[in-house]
Amino acid sequence: MTDPTPLDWRRQPTGGDRLLIIFRVVATFALLGPPLGALTFSGLFWLNAYLRHSPDFGPDMMHGFGMMALMGVPMSYVIGGLPATITGAGFAVWQAFRGPVSFSFAMAFGLASALGVGASGHWLLSEGAFPDRSQFALLLLTCLVPTLICWSITRNAAIAPPQETP
Image 1 (cartoon, helix red, strand yellow):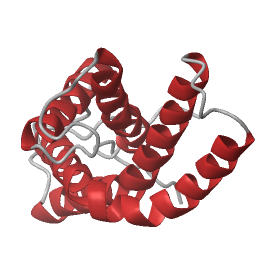
Image 2 (cartoon, one colour):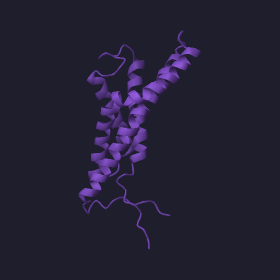
Image 3 (cartoon, one colour):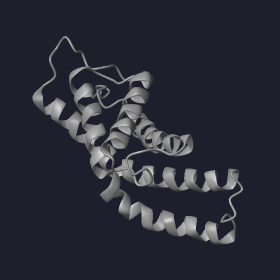
Image 4 (cartoon, one colour):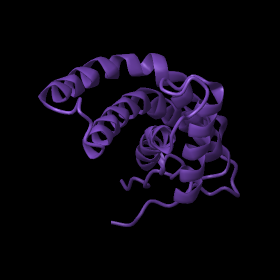
């Protein structure tokens, strides 16, 4: 079995090929990005409290983590749906017109989307300013981890399917 070959970009892909690539990538980011971001946020929030030996950390916080994960996943579409869709659209356009996205570009785009969320003032914990580095790191990782997971799923969207032999 050979690896799939990239689309021949000297031969212009049809509009239907590009539209299909855009749809697949945006749908993946829009459907998987927000819940992955919510679970990343919940896990990092819990880990931060554990590492700081917070007095609130204990069995009650563990139950709170479960409830936060259960309630956070449906709410994640309200909070993170638009940033995930915009990030997915950027990846989709790049893949449809330029080819596969590299890991370094995916990281840079994930960090740029985190900075965009932070600059918009819609980050839940900041109210426009970050009082300490841990909240800023939480924002960066909450955007970066889902971006890289969605990128790993869609990184071969611009790869031509293998030729079927009769």
